[in-house]
Image (cartoon, rainbow, N blue to C red; front, side, top):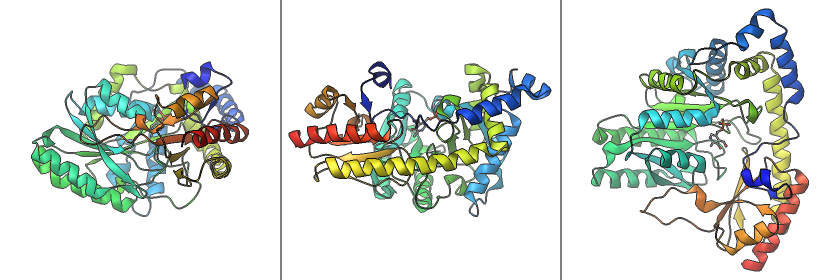
Length: 399
Ligand SMILES: Cc1ncc(COP(=O)(O)O)c(C=O)c1O
């Protein structure tokens, strides 16, 4: 992100920015006017709120999730507003959750590859990550079982606290893990937690759930268990990333601990920002905007795929995305930060995310060196086409 901001000529197919043109400027100013012209709400929004978050927004969040999970939402308790913590983006929830649940030396299971910023959180807390292979339809359950068995044999299960799963249009691979696979993964965690001596949670990160432009929604893991699923989502990517409002749901006693620790961090998420989201949900401006974004990203993904087909050598493999912001590609050459490809791309003023960054430090397997994440979020259609053309030239020269 910094490189993108520092080098204005750089075409960034790397940064996780969302589409700039479609940011809801009009809607947000309308919401702000509404909020600030109301005698009571204006003062409320400019005052401290509660650490757990605005009561109306928590309720709306729980209700929206329940609706999205219908008809599979069978555990009413999972969709109570009391189970919702409003956070400064879902990023803060991920940090808080890790801080509260994990001690240094603990282990979190992650997908191979995974959201690399989360790997940074784990690293900063001294928590180890074990990678679980990912298939085109989500988590590889036999690999999950193999890793759990290995940890059991090494008497390391007591250190395992959770499985972190980016289940919808995953960052970076674009893969979605089906509800059936999530159920099977939970069953495996249950089986092995007997040897851990404490719960092993499934932390479902649904940051891209609303950015679906093909196929049907999958029920969340909240439909699968009343006490082992932690869920986080966001109002940032589907509306405005700068709003920085996200949320998380967790069973007790986790939620109380998370709320106390959040209080130590910040007393609660920006009350004004929460009021904007609340007003946007109430007026349906939010829902309308999600519809606009879905069409926008479908169009941008199509432009990117057309460019990939035209300019990349046929030896590069990639999947057509059905949602989210990313295409994950396998090249016939090294793509790492120190590779000639990455250097040549930089010389040509194009940036992608080297796939190696998305893998945990896990000595039990090598890190693939030939992958790259290409985003259709921030760059314009013209930039994407030009960026892929330049990258294609570099790839053809080096492979
Ligand atoms: C998988 C995933 N989770 C969480 C986040 C955090 O997003 P936010 O804090 O804007 O909700 C991101 C942002 O890129 C992400 O890719």
